[in-house]
Image: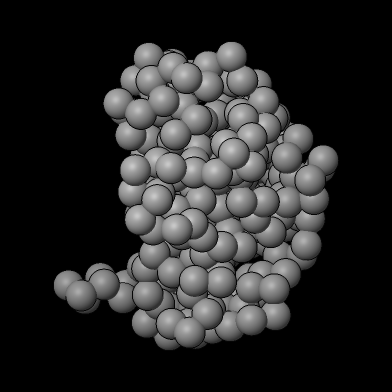
Length: 240
């Protein structure tokens, strides 16, 4: 499904973010990445879908190498959930969800949010999946943080991605809302067979919802284990 080989990334100022990351994710898995801020988690996810250009190494998604020639196809097969939601405040929930189709829609029509009836139905179905159908025509700035993140999830799943990338999706939420968001991601993972790679800080949530947990320190993978096997010794490698 997803294979990452010796991935490196060094920013223009000379700061190394990824130092030879190797990782395989199987179809239908839910894998969480744990690591401190600055460990390279966000850079790794953004490299997978082409939002960052890797300095070296290879990424394969669905047996195709991620490069300039395949990036449009890769981005159509992946959905992205952001820490800060990345919604347009003055747009309704449904129109924010429809922006998830911009890369595959008529550019002129989508500029004026002239989406087809079928696309609007798909957006409503996505909002129903995340439990927000009744908020479809509310402006996003009228919603709570947890609701806004659910709109972000609906936007990510509207194109039915093979791979869902979630970058600290609950970092700014209270514990109850965070648990709701992770349970929703798990539901999508199980019911739709969507592969999920999720960056987290919360150890308890990673262990509760993930099949595997990957530890990242200073741009390197230091463990890659089943969630049930993660104990204090593994966590000390990250947080000690």
